[in-house]
Length: 225
Length: 63
Image 1: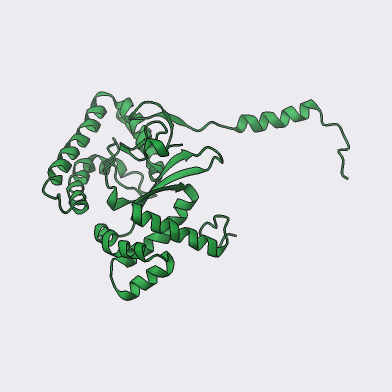
Image 2: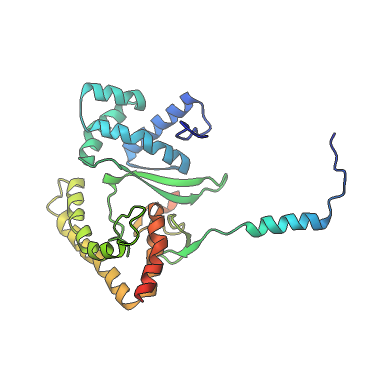
């Protein structure tokens, strides 16, 4: 039984593993976006997210507690000054992992991990308005999905853009709303003209977290057509 | 040293392989929405580095 066996060992001793995670975290805090192997990226997420949460409250105690794990004064400073401010009051989920493919040589699966708030671009997909679903909510889903697309997208984009670049706040909201308008237009056009094409796009655009939803979508579209 | 008692016939070898090699599947591939080249589902495109409508990887770091 794998009770109490959470987390990846990464083929390292405990000390080596801690050092690896510390240096990966420092790199992520410095560069906001790093490329590493998928298992390391997945191990890094539960390591660094509690640290970011702690960085929201700037006290000496918190800094020392974070330093225990990061082992880098520069990284701690950057985390408490820059990252914590940009993250704002996001309730967890500070990082995003995107799989890249296998690297030549050893065939290891590579991934890009980034801080969401520094790289917040809304994915422009036909599935952008898809509401999150949980298990057991299968039947009422279709109705929710139709109502959400317009409302879900508009309020979010200007906010995040403003947070990202406070200095250029005057310029970005216009650009953001323009983008939002552009993003909204194509999916509706596709769905009316070419339902099958839209279905294919939906499947194509879904990311790893949405596997369940994307698997169900083509069926929905076919019913409509 | 342990040794095989019986000759392993071609048929036995081929029966085993027919099960195993036919069970192997290629990864599902789709066309990239940005550049149209084939890419694996749920991965960034290996040729243009796009994923879900934004550039995720620079070309130089692509594998």
